[in-house]
Amino acid sequence: MKFGGTSVADGASVSRVVDIVESCHSAGNEVAVVVSAQRGVTDQLITMATELANNTDSSGIEPFINSLRIRHGKVLLESAEDYADEVGILVEEQLCNLENILNAVHNLRELTPRSRDYIITFGERLNSLVVSAAFRQRGIPSETLDGCEAGIVTTPNHGEAMALPQSEEKIQKRVLPLLADSVPVIMGFMGCTDKGVVTTLGRSGSDYSAAIIGAALDADEILIWTDVDGIMTSDPRLIPDARVIPSISYLEVMELSYFGAKVMHPRSIEPAMNKNIIVRVKNTFNPDHPGTTIVRGERRDTRVVKALTYIEKVAMVNICGAQMIGRPGVAKAIFSQLADRDVNVMMISQGSSEANITLVVEESQEETAREALSALVRQGMVRQVTTNRDVCAVAVVGSGMAGAKGTGGRIFTALGNGGINVMMISQGSSEVNISFVVRQEDGPRAVRILHDEFHLSEEDDE
Ligand code: ASP
Ligand code: MG
Image: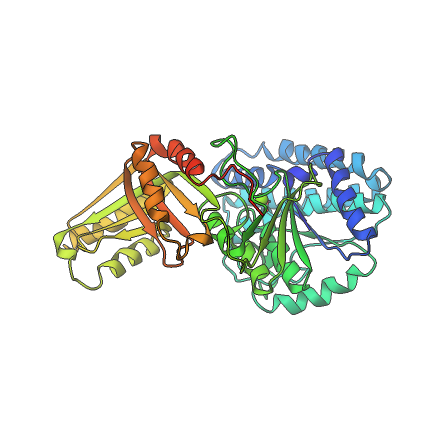
């Protein structure tokens, strides 16, 4: 079971978490818990560390450490009164450690990827102490393990590390023996290299931690406890009658999260999928709601389209020139220029005339992309590179679309009838996702039109 930052924000919510774990555990199940940081703490750590490396002023350290002390101390007192002193000392140790590193960053005016990763794990370090104490307060034996101790061995790429296969055996050795008579609390978001250097798994990486650990333990289920009822057909801020999807396939969830829907860490599905373990997304604040079940999904779906996501902060990059026609190596040159500058490409489309290639990148990478590609204009490989920020992307996701005739027709007819101009379209051959780009101002309406067209607000007829 993984619990997110809002599920552990105060004494009352931690007590809900303990209720959930207790009822599962006392029913005879073995449970391992993964926790992330309290809400907002990771962001604060990132900001603090970055500022200290770039500023002469270090007066922010003390109040920051103090705010963490107050915040965690309060939840500790509310949810584990009897352990407040004992665990309070451990919290102080962590705070002291953090304060020292922050001072070092400031003295050196240097924040390496390695020290940054270490610093930003402190949210998890602090929170796990509190949650584990709350279990003990209710009579459930519990100890904390950091991601490295739990056995997660990762690649050395800081900030986006990936678990290596040898983790499985390590996790089994370390965590399995604890499950018989306790509930270990494992710090999410982190692992370490085989040399013991602390790494992080990418933002929202605790989902990924839970999946790695659940898969290694051959769990019956991986539960992601969050603060919404499940994965929704679309963003409820955009579509007030968006609905929780009862059941969705691994593939569909991956498409959704790659495409920016903040449902789960994009890599967190793979470990579960490899072992065919059911993943459930449920609401800590509404535990009786069945939530969303993520499964392999061999069953032929009655619905062609499952969900819609919408990304605002994107830019479209258009590369054109008659000299591109029939010339091998143009795409290679484009993508290697972008890769060299760390520009991530979200969508690609090329017409069969080959005279232009259109890409979608994150808005924050537009400048870099344009600069990177201007080299190709200078070399005469392409004629022109233009960009457009005034756009947004919509992804229509559903594995029922594969092989179903007429879905594309329905999508674009509905948009056309709504007077919306589509600027770019892309569909991968997996056919699980059709994405398109429209003008920024048309985005929300495009999503609404399609949500209606595919009756996504209506309950499944099963
Ligand atoms: N605390 C980390 C983050 O904010 C990991 C997580 O929340 O899953 O990204
Ligand atoms: Mg999350």
